[in-house]
Image 1 (cartoon, helix red, strand yellow):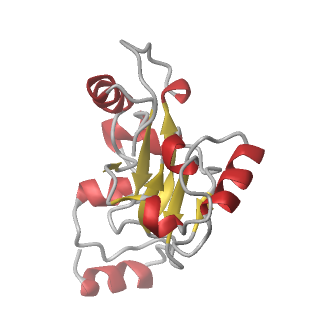
Image 2: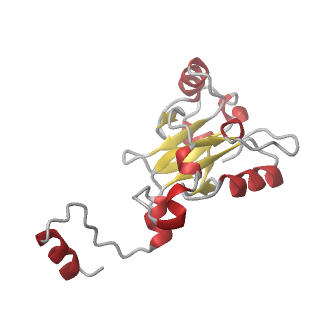
Image 3: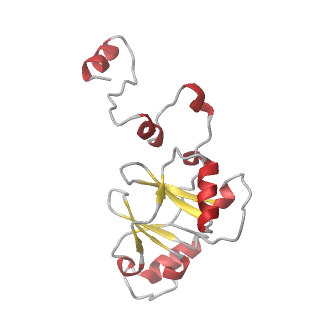
Length: 164
């Protein structure tokens, strides 16, 4: 909608008016309100776990491992100061060189999903890659959470560990 139309709606008393040009898919992935048939659909954004341990590039692997294990996680995510996802630390990376900085052992540019992905699509991808979790970000790369296989109400097809 044009800025002029948005302004006019505001003068008519509408409170939540958005001048949004990025498109419907981006709107949905940002978690903004939906209408119509998709309004009741379940997307992975509603299923993610936002409590995954997060760290910075300069943190030490030993500190990450200690905090991750204390919170029941065997993986961790690396974020910048704006919560943009920079990397992912697998179980193996957390057990690598404990004196190293996170930046030296993390997987850079991990695969991510948008929150408007349907659960069956994410499950199919996890099955194909033989993994148990995926990272979910907004379209601008802001970390939203981790979707774990166990948080889906869908059966697992075969083996798997975890993924970024």
